[in-house]
Length: 391
Image (cartoon, rainbow, N blue to C red; front, side, top):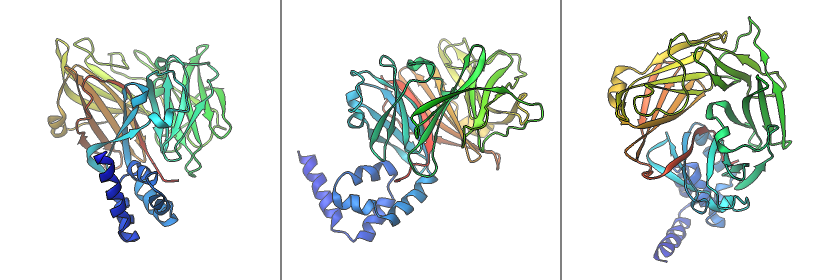
């Protein structure tokens, strides 16, 4: 009760300040905090809805990159944890329980699939449904089953799917994923503007066809074999073009393995995304390993091979070297910046690391993340995102 009185007093005191000063204070906050203030009272809502404020806020938010983490917990306590490169000293908590109430999951834990701008996708395992949550418009929408039918959470592969939002600010989005169907790679695309799915069999790439990484192309991983990977390349702005099969080969004699690194069974973790592959090398035994090297590879322009892009330099490795028992990661490329989050667990303690590589300046950067208070919890999804706006 005392906390409620203090909050009310603080809100009243803030409202007494000049509007220009209040706007400057709000602009120093990150977008999830601004959205919560908008719901607090009518005065704040009116100020935050002002066109000038929205324009300034969006200008700042568009250049901000987020890392979102979802813990596996009861739905009634659902919280999305968010960390941004704009404010590198703490995690933000985004409560979801009230937002998810209109959708009945029978108390089931959810899995966090993907994020893009204001849209977040969550999947259930028992109900086998996917829902789209818009944090700014405060709406939740069920996505109809794909042509493959209802899918459990284990069917979704992080590097094999992509969420693309409409840059116009309309709130529309496309959700893409690629799978083998009848031994052929097929692209499935859900369009929120029509609430329908479209499936297209990918064609083999022409010999002279160039598919540069980044830009308008989306690369979705289908499978990674001992010597060859299979990816589907498609347009990020239109689904009118036929998707293309890309088969880059990896010349290393060791096989490619996607997933977790445990004990001394596997000494390399491969993290895929957006036409890139990060190889995380380690050493150790007895279920505890030590991070020893990180390499970044990318699909060549002709799509025929994986080529080395860069390796994390020794001075950075000396700082990020760590012990772990199990590790996973996610990778995203946007505007020439490749970002990777490596999440490790050792003796029940979770640790996270944010690595980025600037492809223009050939420069590595790393960002240590503060404790997310995840001891004893299971990871239920992780994703990068950018472009959050008040529209």
